[in-house]
Image (cartoon, rainbow, N blue to C red; front, side):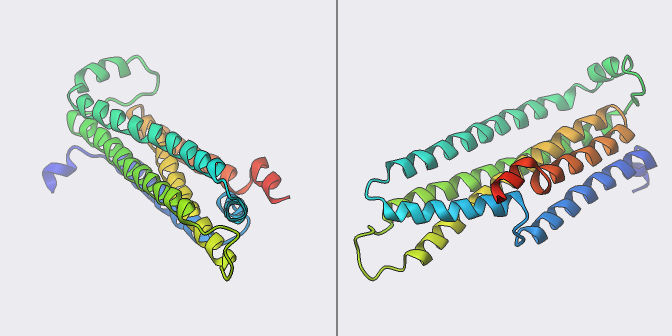
Length: 229
């Protein structure tokens, strides 16, 4: 433990702890507020429920299949990109000396030893691996949504609880969107972690900025106000 602490200082530890607390705290807050109606996810979930209601009224559901396919393609793009990012970060583990030679020309940058360089790269790798798992789970749920839509009964069939079916489909697609949202949030915090290579204080400032921007978009944006009208 003593050998480990000689490579760390209070600035680096404080910045890392601040980052973890901000991400975990915001994720917990978002999960708590997910049951509220005044969030972007809740507002769009309302429209997903309406989508499932309209889907049950249609005989030809090609438009629903196209919609699910479009959602899957966007998530597939992000998932593939995440794999390339993780591969690129893995190769960066051995580039400490070259990057340090560049950082000396950046004002207010803080030089780092090889240990801290590996810690910062590993943090980014963990973030984007987490994002990859969230993207792929969201993608799988959209696959299940496609199966659900294809298996939904026709509106001509009697004695069908259409409202229950619409609610089930809306929840399935809404949960896929929730995991996609969590993966995007990981991207935002991953971008904030890039500032750690410059200085721990820049890392903390970027983290606070990401929390503010994410909060504004999910709870105070013009898009949310328009969707709730």
